[in-house]
Structure formats: C-alpha cells, structure tokens
Image 1: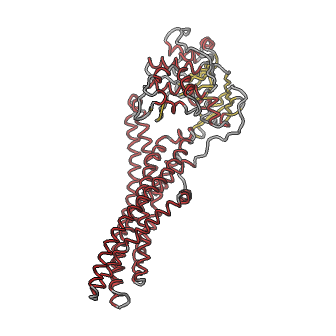
Image 2: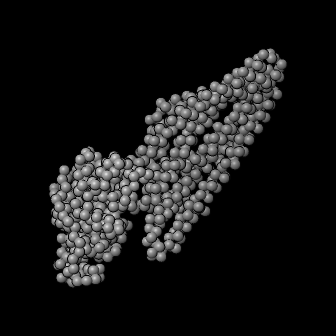
Image 3: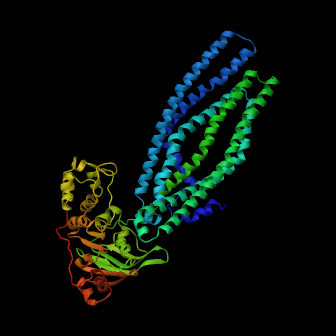
Length: 607
C-alpha cells in the first residue's frame, strides 16, 4: 500500500490548508497559558484525589505487616476505618476534580470553536468555491466533533490519569525505591512500538480526514444537483465518482486500523509484564530482606494501579492523534491569506470599467479573453450568450468577488480588489438565485449589512420591496425568530428579506445573476416588483438567461467563448442581424420587435 503522503497529494491540492504540527503545538500552548489558573486548580483537585487513592495500597500493606507479625489487633481495626475514610474522601475529591475539569474543557472548546467560526466567515469566497464546500463542511462537523470529544471527555480523564500516574510513582519510590526498578519494563517494551505508531499515525489520520472531506463534497454536490444529474442521465457516472471517493476513504480507514492493531497488543504485553516483573522483583527483595513484606505487597499493588491510568492515556493516545489532525485542519482555515489587500483609496465616482481583462480558474485555461467594457452610471446592461460563454464569470469580476488574472476592473478609478469588503459591498453587490435565512430574528437578518439600522429603517427597507405587510403580520414583527426550527418563511418571503438587505446596503451597482429564475411564475412576478424598487436609479448588470431581460435593458452585451461579440441596444443588435438577432429569434419564436414585461422604476433609496 502506498504511503499516505502520496495518496493525499491530489486531495490536499484542492482543499483548504492544514496547519503544521508546530502551529498546533503553539496554539495549544497559548490555550494553556490563557487558562493556566483554572488548569492549576483542576490539577490541584486531581492531585488531592490521586493522593487519597494511594492510601489504600499503603493501608493494605500495613495490614499485611500486622497480620504477618501478629501485632496489635486494635491497630487492624484502626487501619480498616482509615481505609474506609480514605475511600470516601477519594470519592468526593474525584467528583470535585472531574467537575472542575469538565468546566475547563467546555471553556477551552468554546474558545476554539469561536476562533474557528471567526476564521471560517473570513474565508475568501473565491477560494472557498474553488476548494468546494465539502472540505469546509467536513471540518465544521467531523473535525469539530473529534476535537470536542477529546476536549470534553478526554481532557478530564487525561488529567486524572496523569496526576494519578505521577502520584503513584512518587509514592512507590517513597515506599520502596529498589522495588520500583521493575517499573522500567513497561517503557522498554513500548519504546519501539510507540515510536513507530507516532511516526505513522498523524499522516495517516490526515489522509483519512482528507478522504472524508472529499467524500462529503461528492455527496453534497450530488444531493444538490440530483435533479439535473437525473435529467441528463449522469447518475451512473456520479455513482461511480461516489464509489471511488468511498473506496479512498475505506483505504484510509484500513491504513489507520492497521496502525492501531499493530500497536495496542504491545500495550497488553507491557501491562502484564509490569505487574509480573514487579511482583517477582519485589518478592525477591523481600525474601533477601532488603524490603519488608508489606512494602513488597504495596509496591506490587502500586504497579497494578498503574495499569488503569496508563491504559487510559494509551487509549486516548489514538483519539488525541485524531483530534490533533482535526485541530490542524481547523487552524488551517485561519491560515488562508486574504484575497485582497486594501489600498485605502476610495472610488472617485460610480462608474464601473473592465479594461482588457482575462481570467482563468486554472492556470493556462482562460475563460475570459481580453474583455473591455465601460458601464454608464444608472444604465441597465444585459449580458447574454450561450452556456459557457463566460457571463457569470464576468459578473463575478464586476462584483469584485474574483480578481482578474490580467487587466483591471475598477470603480471610480480604483480596482475593486483594492477595496476592503465593507467598502466594496457599499459600491457593488451580486444578487444570485441563492438566498439565505439565518437563524435569529427578522431584524437580525436585515441588519447584516447595516448593524446600526433602527426599526424604522428596517421597515422602510421592507416597504421598498413590498414585504412590510407580512412582517408586521408576524406574531412578534421584527422580533419574530426565523430560520431552522423557527417560524418558516416561503421562498418568496426569504428572497424579499435578501432584497431588503440590499436596500439597506445601498450599493450604486447591482449585478443580477437571474435572481428570480428558480421561483414559480406567480412568485417571480411578485418578486420582480420587489426587485424593481431595489434596482431603480442604480447601475444594473443583468446576466440574462431569459431574453426579455435583454429587451428591457439600455444596452446588451453578447458574449461567446469568453469574449464580447456584440454590444449595443436591443434594436441596434436586431438590425445588425448577428448572433444576438439569431438568439432572439430562437428564444422568442416571433417577430424580433415583440415586447415583453418591463420592470417598473423609481427613485434610488438613500439614507
């Protein structure tokens, strides 16, 4: 079987970055420093609990001495009472220590989760779309869960185990230092297997997580495009792609399973050898008179007590490798560099210009070729053309989502990629077929572009898109909770919220990528009236899949093979008899002069 590094190369090249082991250690050290006081308290409680747990072997050793030498009977009674008290105190201290550990673990995990979410929402949209949503979803779910499991459950148990091991070793050395020499048997047996395991585990689990992300991506994309795949008869090919991704995930799981199966049997051997070697060595020392019988029994019991905490640590070692891999993937999201460096310059006007622009999603494969286009402030430009002509790509460049490979896209003389995102979204916005309702109140959803907006401004924005009526009719108005598990919204209502957000953002240019095409005709007509209030008085670039949009536009840009083929008014292009006239005749099936619905216009919203 190939090494994981060779097998993951193709996947990691297309996925979000993964932080290095040094970065993981650095962030872990920072977390420890930040929480050092509660951590010290947790360790203190565990140390007290571990010390009380050591009373039992010592008391039993003293009982053996008393019984062996037939000493005072009353001392036996006192020792038994002491044993009962020690067990009771140990139980209380262990409960307090575990509670403190769980509180600390939840606090640490909350900080990690908040940092990850903050990094995820800052991801450049262009990079996220190239990497695919599967990788981010896998990190948000599987990697977060793996880390949460170790932090919430493993951290308390590891703290208990660690302090117990230290306390047992110290007490055993105090009881009979010579007998403790037998304890070295376990680390000697585990040294080589542990080294091999640690060398292979981390790359193995990184490979496994990468295949999980790829599998999640294939599954999500298949579910999202199920109707299209079925209509085009591509389900068998998609099924083959899913089986291939599943086979890679299975191969990764087999690799990590073999690592575990080769390591853990050595642990059982080491634990058995630890107790056996200690019993034999301590027994021989007792026989030779070096230590007493009670000390030999106590040290043997201490060796037996070591098995559980060491087994706990070894058992969690595998989960720690998984969690470390997950943490590296989570931290990798924060290492994604920004896709723009704001220059601090502000646009001198509302004019948008594309100057000799080319663009490639993959190096050497341009999808736009030397495109130049100047938009007049306040005009409506329709971009039409066959599928794959580059319409949506040009729209993304006009919205500042992607930076051109060559050339410049400027607003008021400043390249869009030189603007920070808040400034950019105040200049130009992209409106697509997708819309989102976030968990929270209606007001929370509306205030995303302008957090300081008051209720009166929110209702004014809703009124502009003809949505204030149904919002006022809600049980709690703007305070009504919507989103998953809350008050359901229809598709039209959800998109009206998105349009109202645009009113609040108030950009001077809108790029519309067929924003109402996925809705039923009645909803589309209603939303077109809402959309009219948003687009009125603004510069509008409409990526048109239905040519009635082009008929209503001030100018029409016809694209083919990533180039602008024609540019002019509807009437001019029909008269020219070129590719646009052919598209119009094919789509309309009637006279080129036939009309279509026109969106109403109105004044631009201002604050």
